[in-house]
Amino acid sequence: MKKYLAEMVGTFVLTFLGCGAAVSLNCGVDTASVVGTAIAFGLSVVAMAYAIGGISGCHINPAITLGVFLSGRMNSKDCGMYMVFQVIGAIIAAALLAFLVSTDPGLARGTATGANACASENVMNGLIAEIVLTFIFVLVVLGATSKTNGATNNFAGLAIGLALILIHLVGINYTGTSVNPARSIGPALFEGGKALAQLWVFIVGPFVGGALAALVWKVIEPTEK
Image (tube, rainbow, N blue to C red; front, side, top):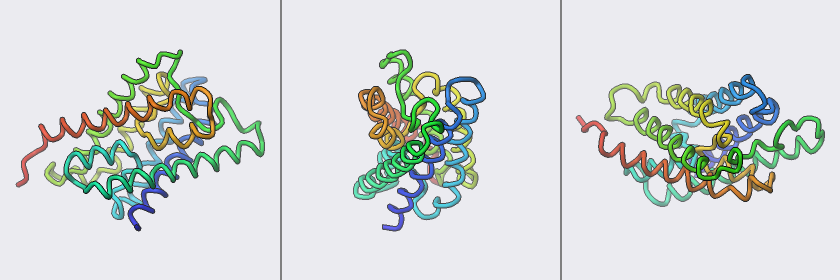
């Protein structure tokens, strides 16, 4: 139960700080807001990696959990429970963020929760972007945390956080960047509208990308020494 609770707390922090930055900076209005939001998501992952990495592995993302499961590193029970608690953490974070904004509407810039939506209604482009970006992200996670990949796992938290910054810099203008179903489910429930209607994109895309990353990693994974 401790590792499930750790995943809930970690996903809460990622969603609250990352989406909170997107709201506060009015992400997408200019380059500075995009860079700031990207950094917020990346640093949230770095912070949580070193806070709860030793407890749960700090997945805080169902797509990563799926990739880890398909790579044979966890059992099906833990996989399912991780995902449940990740979604719970994201919902709590989105609820708190929505509440804070509701107390002073002037705080809300852009969306009130940092919810995801495909740019220019181009759902297919958004789906492709989420698949590719999640594939890259989960591949980095699997490689950086592998015990057969040299000493890279000593710096896994930093590598994963920096990768997430890069992924947001690319993806924000296409989809707001999710690569994380939990991070999208929570805000969409409170945002409604377009974010909720397109939520399937941010569930299907990351899961497909995560599964592809696990498949590729199994092919290229170094042999155990």
